[in-house]
Image (cartoon, rainbow over all chains, first blue to last red; front, side):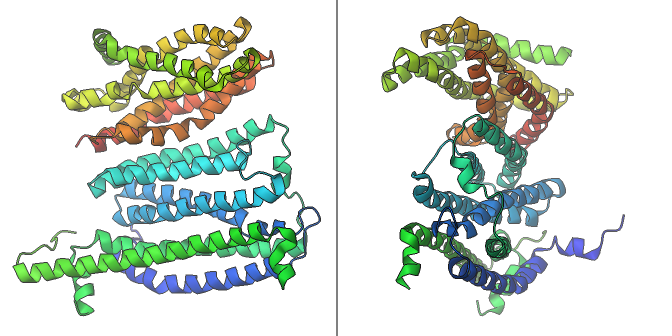
Length: 250
Length: 62
Length: 221
């Protein structure tokens, strides 16, 4: 089976390094524009909520960050699996780059969630809320991945072992998600109702969706950005890196 | 304007949430840049070492 | 089948020879379960309420203690390499080691549960459901513990992070196991979570050994 040329190019570190360098700035511009538009829309233009008043405006950042944090784990696990199966260093590099970004997004989701919870539920933290529990466990999954990577001196071993952990984790993520929802359905807590918006007004839906796209683009911008540093780090003693740094007056 | 900042009394929460988010994004950008720069610097140092010591450290097989 | 049994029997025999080591997780289980009333100062009713959770968490933590025996001691004296080089498929070897771990560590733990449950004022009628839940949850637990051991087998101080790696993955087990036990306690139907535990066990036993074998191959190089 003849594989298309771009398949091989995607396995070439210098190619991906250059491509990321060209694409990332554009993603950055798109991200900033979308964040600005969505942020302005959500903070200024959208009307106050009937139930929550002004505080509901966290709706335009918290669910999006939480969603992207889960997506980050899936991207990380997928990249790690590709790296494991096809022995692609670059795929491992993507996974390694995605991990800290995903972990920080998860922490951010927990922080924004609890800042939203304090004025609405009356408490910063509610263990029995399924989303807090899921997201907290996701944070531990990210930290476990990072800790396992860090424990190995040999980068190749670290890549492969953490890939196994990531794949097991990604299988467990939906299991954890649904088990926690089931667990919570046994309590009759009012907590679910606050964050569940069964019908969202159109003036709020548009900025909501804009921010979804904004944060997704943001993740891929950060991913490509971080990937370049990861590639240089991994390819430090190669000819093309030598040429790259000496060419800039090294 | 001050009504906008107050956010119906919960201004602290809303603005902290937005602030934390911006901080996390900025942190990610800064950290990626720093990593990239230091990786390039380490590569330069490695190249300099090779030139000085005349000992090849470039991997022949990639 | 024969190699499977051979490996299981070998591990059990080694554990019997080192009974003190094998008893560690059990002692840990009892001690932790003892510490909770000290810390909580519960009334008799509160004891019953927290009993389920305390016993399950203690069992979970105790099962981590038998890690060393799973792969590391074999890795240290080279016998793990021999097992990996043998014509027996590594998945079978792994399953055998998991079965041995379950017999040596988990089964005695489960045997201790009735006494501890009674000490927590849990009614005898609640025990069968708790047994079923434990019997269905612990195979998956053994698989996850073995995975943690395999991922860190190449590390000198791997034991430190195994908790971080394994415990988040066990959350669904904890959820379904404790809810099933509580349903049994309150004489409500517990078939739902028990079936889910069975499903997880099937998934873990089918796919777990593949991941564990892969991790061992990386770790022992």
